[in-house]
Structure formats: C-alpha cells, structure tokens
Image 1 (spheres, helix red, strand yellow):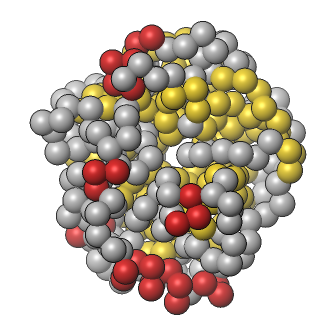
Image 2 (spheres, one colour):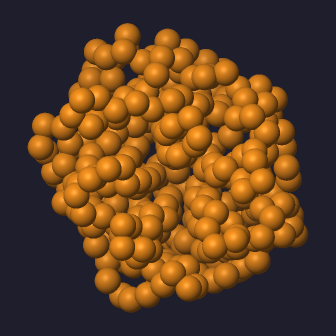
Length: 316
C-alpha cells in the first residue's frame, strides 16, 4: 500500500524508463473466476491447490485447484480483528498479507494502518487449515509510530540457508527494513532493525526475499500504487549473497541508494503491476502480483519467471 503523504513528485524518469521497455513484457497468464485482488500473497497447499490472501476486510481469502480458476473463500477474520483497530482508525480493512506454510501450519503476517500514515503495525496469525475463521491471533510483531522514520507495513518472511527467520517490511520513509524473528513463535527476537533498500524517502515498498542458488533476491515495488489506471507501480529486483544484504542491482547500484533492476512495468492495458510475491511451484518460480485494468479495477496477475545466464530473473 502506498502512502499518500509521499506521492508527491512527478516520477517522470520512472515512467519514461517503464515505457521504454514496454515491448519486453508479456501479458498476465490466464486466470478466471474471482480475480479481484490487491496485494496478493499465495502459497501451495500441502494437499494440493493454492491459497491466496490479499488486502480486504479481515484479510480476504481465495482458493484455486489449478492456479487458473479462483474462488472467494471468505476472510481470515470474519468476526473482525479488534487488536488492529488502534492502527486502522476502526476500519476492518487489513493490508498486504504474507503467507507461508511451514511446520504443519500456515503463517500469515499482515499490516494494520491508514493510508498515508506510518502509525502502523504488523501482526502474525496462524492456522492449520487456512480456512476462513480458523486463524489464531499470535501477536504483534513490530509497530511504527509517527515519530519513526520507517513504516511497519508490507511484511514478508524469509528463512535463510541456516534456518534463521527474518521479516522484511516497509513503505516509503527510510525504505525497506528487516528484523530477526524467533522461529518457535514467529515473533521478533531482538531489537535490531536493519536497512536493506531505500530511495531517499521516495516510493519503495512491498519487499519479498527468496533464495535461489548462491543469491538472495530482494523484490520490491517502485513508484505509485493505489491510483487505479493512473498507477505507476513497477516490479524491481536486486540480489545479495547474504540475506541481510548488501543488495545491488544488475549494474551494481546498491538498493540502499535507489538501485533496482526492472522486471515488470505497465504496458498496454496493464497498469501499475506490483506488490509482488514469488511462489516456488512444481513447474518453477511464479510471479504473483496485482495490476489495474483500464477501468481501474485491481486484478490478479500471474507470470512465470526464468533466469538468464547471469542469474537475473525475467518474466514470460
């Protein structure tokens, strides 16, 4: 979720960069059914099929048996989530969930905030089935206040090669942060706060870290979300041999200094693709994201990912 207070600026350079490579991007793969989503997360279920969670009242859920046809599956918290309303000004709308299935249960990190504010929090819930109403509140992971220079939204869990758990998160302000987690509880393990990417206060959010081969890849979204067909969101990536960085793009520019290699941007009738998640599926890596149609509707986008000879990802 972008922050309205930080949408100032023309982002002309970003738009020109995105337009110049329009022809390189494929359209989203075929999806059908209930595909209205914003900030999607996806996990493959242990018994087969898929579970999607996305921004909505009580965190919206969808299921699919084949990654093509999707149907509404209710919400994680159909009775509300009273512990979040301090941060949402009483709204039931919760943002940007992150889904993982580990150790026999689903782990879902999600955000509570209001648009344009960094009075925000990330919470954890768990479930053994993923079904609507089955989610147990596991606690507050991290919060940010208006006096902080970061924003505690857009969480993503990564487990490194040594089995350590980390949560990356962030939107605007001073950029993308990371904290260590306790694998037993999924909650924060210490007071350390690392910086892994930023644009000098500009538009960067929605981190997602995956390990492939010798590298950890940090995926982020640049520029403006949440403006319908006027959105300029675009998907960027950098990589590091260490989960905590330093991350750099293909040209060696540090992601803490605004670096990022563009992987997907608006093209044709696909506007503002972003808030990406990476699914390691049986047929390879999958990029899952939302984009806006010409009428401003936010829809589910899915593309496959391949890696070039230098190990940099691209979509097809």
